[in-house]
Amino acid sequence: MDVAAAAMISVPLAVGLASIGPAIGIGMMASHYFDSVARQPEVQGAITPQFFITLGVVELLGLFGFVAFYLVFSKITF
Image (cartoon, rainbow, N blue to C red):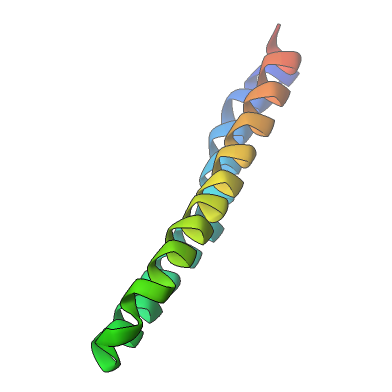
């Protein structure tokens, strides 16, 4: 197996693995957010901005993983 074939196999696998962490984090964060709002609806205005900022940061981690593995893939195959 040459290097290009190894990159074709490993890069999609690495991107998939890099997206598992943020997906789990976003799911847990949303679950806890909705639990806390359901228990105390009066805190919704206070924690909603923090929720969306943290959501963006966690999503950015997944995008960083995608971009990093894409750059590695483009360097290996071309």
